[in-house]
Length: 300
Image (tube, rainbow, N blue to C red; front, side, top):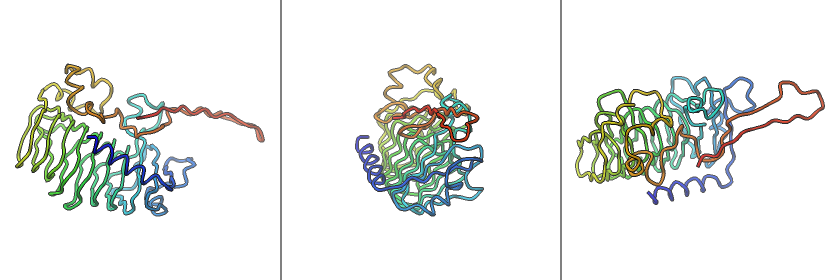
């Protein structure tokens, strides 16, 4: 896990040097210079950050948005209104499908119908995702602190770190397939069975109901099996009430998405400051000054 943290920090520090920030919003009346992720991406250089505002309208249409440059794509997180982290607004930046084609790309705080990883050394952090697809040969992905409601299909790729994610479904089981020589730990699966169709993976400290081992050479260590976590599998979102489950505190501190050195963060708020409220006077006399109050919290 420490190796994962060092890799993530190194990637973020490298990309932050001499980078610019491009803000995107498709909300009517916004001051953002870009209304689409594609336009911001066209103007971006490798290492730049694209920040996407929350909106009631998805970004892009039914097609996938492709990232062909090594950028950091940051959304606001998800379920912010439900968790009373913002006073109003949609609270997410939704893309039907995102395809990553540039080595070292980082995606945080986005809501994605699906994500396709078609490059090496990609980081996906604190996102709400349907399905995850990793192209063969696109190794060394980090998928952490995400809410995943579908499968992870690795297409026989290697050396990934899949940690501190919440997996959920209304189907009988969830699975990770085609992922090899990887570290799969501190995940919580809210399904009847978590099926590991993987090879030579270390699978440990996960919190789940039942393990299915359809692969070869996997090492299962220190996983905790309980049927209690399945009681919330049909909920629309995860909030602080998760901790009201009848699971002993010592179990939650050692197993599953909320344990370990990099625990799951409610609403997937990206690291750093985020705005929780803005107070702007409705009218201002011409030539006079005014005060705008912005309330900010910090996510670690």
